[in-house]
Image (cartoon, rainbow, N blue to C red; front, side):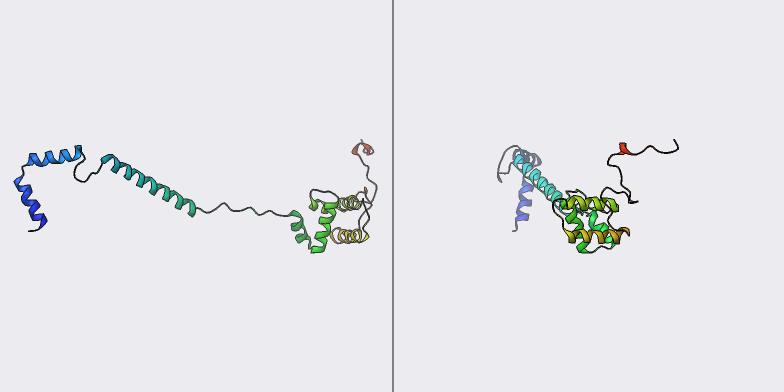
Length: 171
């Protein structure tokens, strides 16, 4: 005979109360298989926690990263807009470094700022070729040569301090 048939015959001989008592005693005590209910609950909780951690890790891996911000070089951008070559760009960087100017692109604001930068850069020692290239750059960008240092756009000498300006006429 097969096992299910034997089990059915055994259950038929037992009454209902004895079956319930056997089930109750199995739940109350550790018998037969040696399973502990609290250990089983702990294993289930640990398995759920592991699944949650793995789900979180997979979500973090799928999340798109923060886009990197590319640093824009204002001088290189201005050089592109003005159509300047590498040599002119390098000359501007050299002038700014020698003049200890924090923003090399500011040298291209006006002919006066470029002339001021050239004078500050070449204060230690004159470099005629760099001065000539700066003059050619000024001619190309602004349509005029380098003005004298301290002169405004009209070529007139500008006062060193705003307080030295003559009073406005008509007042």
